[in-house]
Length: 162
Image (cartoon, rainbow, N blue to C red; front, side):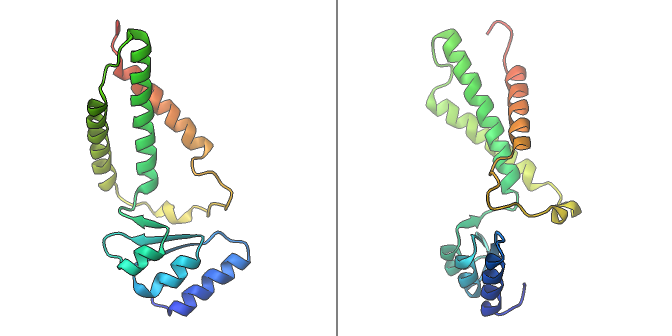
């Protein structure tokens, strides 16, 4: 509901919630504050959004690829933690110190953010149905992909005789 009055936005959110819908509102201006607060999930723009919108929202969006970023971070962090754990158990000592582990994490996150930032949007994105109120944050398919990718990274990242 772009270019509508703040009251119309708020009324739309209230009506959708009364019908049992999960309502997410994205806003960047002061006039979006009431709808952002009323929504189940209020998302404000981190760069272009006003301070009032950011304070009224639940989430401040810094980039538009937060789900893919989450999957990427979970995958690389699970792989790195499991490799570090297995190496510690098998060798009897920790292969990476906390500072080294943070550097590895920083490098992995930076490269992942660059890869996601250059990805082109798809037309199919808006065809996806909304997710229900009780749907899990990480779906079974996401878990399957996360674990498969983490196992692949662990297998590719370990050397024979380690």
